[in-house]
Image (cartoon, rainbow, N blue to C red; front, side, top):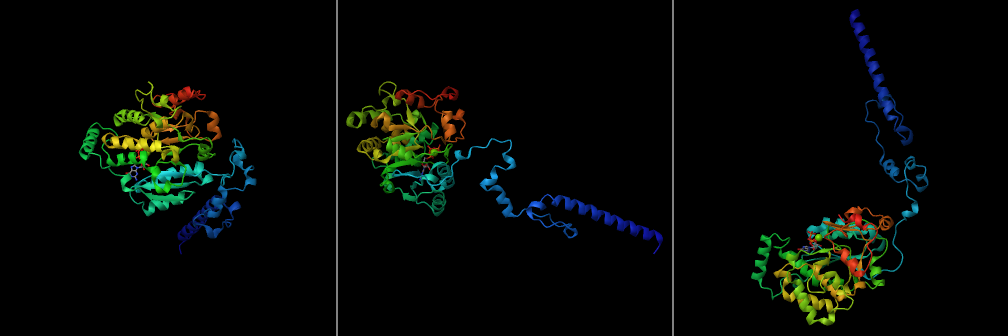
Length: 421
Ligand SMILES: Nc1nc2c(ncn2[C@@H]2O[C@H](COP(=O)(O)OP(=O)(O)OP(=O)(O)O)[C@@H](O)[C@H]2O)c(=O)[nH]1
Ligand SMILES: [Mg+2]
């Protein structure tokens, strides 16, 4: 072999040796970050070129959930403001008695995932500790997927009911041509849901029939839950028991003005009912909440019925049943587009005493597009609320809650002025 070839071979060997040494250094120094605490085998020449070791799954998860005793020594506790532990009591089933009550949801199979979200809000903030039942109603049979997902999420018993045909159809006295002409007119005037038949069946059902369903027969109180709602605060007391023990019949969180074009003759019809059934109108009612001139006109104020905690016994009373039958005969669910919110509200305002209607100020609630967030800073702290108080609708121009407070002679809570706009 010529001398120049020997020199080249020697240079190549030296270069290769040098490269291997550099690579060895790189791999051993990077893997040393893992090795001391996680039992990674010591890096050696045989590991060069292999994939660096991964964190074992068991180590990853145990890092997230440290035993309590270790918590105070955590490096992350320095420079933070940890909550006192007893502010977050361990959760379990709340002790004590329960009311005879259930959640109630009207939904379609296509609402599965939106009602799933609502259920998680209710369960996480309240029901996982109280385990109340949940009744689901539908005008079509619920499919297996709906039942599977909702049963999985509810901590109480779930029950699924089909709505009887006569509660979800046109009564025989409705003139179909007249009803169709109204829908076409409302479509042209772009009135929301104005051309919808199913929305009208829904409003009529929620106004007068849901509480007649056999699955609700044995319950005394209900809490209505719609798809896509949110709760922002813990509900760490039992609102059903509160209703029972304080003789409340109807509870709300949001109130507002109804869209006049959907109820042109609802008040005239209600006035006729009042004249024919004066014994159903109670003394000490809430006429002041719904009228500014002692009943001559309706000011369109109503409680927003997508959230309600109420007494089924009241809805099943002769007074409310007579009222619904009277309205149904008049045909306004189909010749106009009467909503269940003003119907329940007028019924509650006229047939209940003021003290029987409860404002659930400490239940922070959202249904598109309105938020109820407690005005009081103390409540928002006590119930661990995540809502921005500026979003609170109560004191804004389109809300009727100020009127409710005025009627009751209540002072508005501290800080309400900052939430007006
Ligand atoms: N089974 C069934 N449920 C319905 C139907 N239409 C509406 N619902 C339910 O009735 C309730 C009210 O309907 P929504 O569509 O939420 O009416 P809304 O709250 O006035 O309007 P949104 O602003 O769209 O929420 C909800 O619980 C719906 O899931 C229907 O055709 N069949
Ligand atoms: Mg809704």
